[in-house]
Image 1 (tube, rainbow, N blue to C red):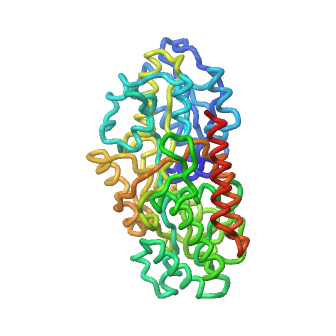
Image 2: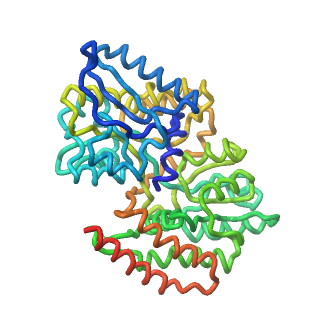
Image 3: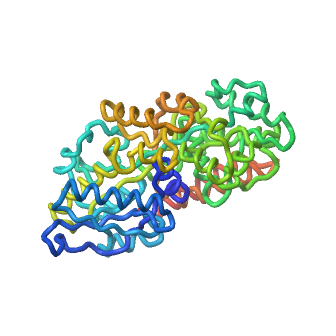
Length: 445
């Protein structure tokens, strides 16, 4: 989900996402004859350490590439959904501009990004980028961008509460039945302890419903994107599990209509056993809500038939010259796709007391992955053993559905009904939601 992903993923790499697309494409040369490129996502001045690191990276890059002039723009967030489409259509984006994975197809469809196929093979380690990530930027055999970070959903849990409830923190639940049983045991500790918390407001309920559907092996829309697939056995299984946990087991607490900050606060207070999210939530819980790295762990999604995949990357202005594109690709390679430099400078991140050793971003396979993991291990300052199961278990990743935010809004109502009404009719809720999503998809064709 874009509203929460944008900040969380960056923190995992020690960089706060900032910088938005703010000006039109600039001249391709500066006064001294250098190739001039504009880039976004420069951290704001309010994030002093991140800003300084970014400026250091520009200085290092320009020294290594004396014919390139990098001009950074900052604002928050990197990409504002309210203005992105208008700036895209008006050609007002930087030479190198930030996109969510879910925006890539639309940018390509509108012919607003340059084809960079002939340039990306020069990126060292490009062949090691995971296909599931790399292919997001590929359409009809052409490449239109490069990834920056990626994430997938898993089960964040409190190891201390697992131990108190008689559960083995080294063996988190792997099925939804085990998950339900664990939540009930944790809630049984009493004193306001909640076994599992889920979202059901501000489109976040629909976002989590999607993640849970994927874990059951389901989908949100048909392969051709024309019809809803929520009124299925998988959809009913998701809602029935939640309904049983809420009203039969009493393992989800009485306070509902929760959002991500509510749940993070609960986890930080030590009163919550489990919730679903990506690894970037862990430093958020520690930094903002006084959680403990020692207590927080992440495991694969229960069921493990699928998980929600997301992330972001960079595309290149279609008006950019070949020289600008070459320079822009070099910048993204240095800043985001090289172990030990830019956002992957784990030694600097550790000195700046940013978390090092989290299992994501996890962009690569092969030798590049080995190099990055070696550096992470050398400078790790978090308990990496708490994330080992998540990192070593392969779960198929799926992107958010088309018209994701509108669909999430529909499913918010379904989630809130199940979690606030004991007599909620699951069959009717899913049937109504399916009809609404069908209409949404029809209107967008």
